[in-house]
Length: 319
Image (cartoon, rainbow, N blue to C red):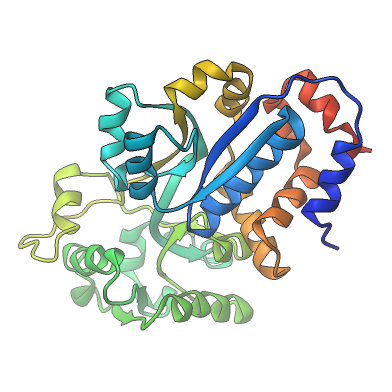
C-alpha cells in the first residue's frame, strides 16, 4: 500500500530532535522520470532530515544551467548528464558548479540486451559475435529504436559495422518507444527470444531482468562517427556510458557544508533506481510517493548518507 508523502512527512515533523535548520534551498527538478525521482528523494532528506525549506525548479539541464549562470539558482542540480549538456564542464571549470556525487553510480547505460533466461540457456548470446554466428538463437531479429531518436542513428550505423545483413540478422524498426518496450514485455511473457537496444535506468529494465551483450571494446573515433547520420565508414564499437551527476553551486557547498556532505554520499545503483521506477509505474505513484517507498524499504542503501542528527530526526519512519 502506498503511504502519502504528506502523511510520512507529518510523522517526521512530530519528532522533537533539536536540529539547526539549513534555511531556504532551491532544487532542480528534471523533466524525465528518473531525474524527477532523484529530486523527490533529495527533497525529502533536505526537508525531513536537515530542516531545509525546499523550492523545486522544473526544467531541462540546459535551462537549469543557464539559470545558474545568470542568477545563481537553483542551489542543487538533482541529476544532470554533463555529456548531454557540455556547458556543465565549462561552468565546473569556472567554479560556478561543483560535482558532489555520481547520483547513479554506474552512469546512464545504453546498449544491446537479451533476456536473462535466454542468456542462461544460450551463453553465446552474451557476446555480439556469438549472436552473429547463430542469429536463430535470438529469433533472427534485432529490435531497433524509432526513427528520429538518437539511438536510431547509432544503431543504423552499427548494424552496418557489425554486418547484420551478411549474418542474416533482420532489423525491426519500431514505430515508438512504447512498441519497443512492449516487445520486450511480450517476449518475457512467453520466454521467447529477444535481442535489441535499450537504456538504463528505466522502469522496463527494472521489471525485466536483462543481460547486456558484450559488443567488444569501446573506440572513441568509431563512436563519434556512428553518432552521425552521414557516417561514411561505420566501425565496430560498444556504446559509451554517460555520467549522471548530482551537483551544486559553489556558494551552496560553502554555505551548507553538512547538507553538501550528505549529498556527496548520495548515490543509487542502476539496479535500485530501476526497481523504484518500476514500482512507481506499477503502482501509478507520484515521485514523492516513490521517494517515501524508498525511505521505508531501502534503509540499508541510504542510512549511511545521513549524519546522526538527521538519522535521529527520521527515526519515526524506521520503527
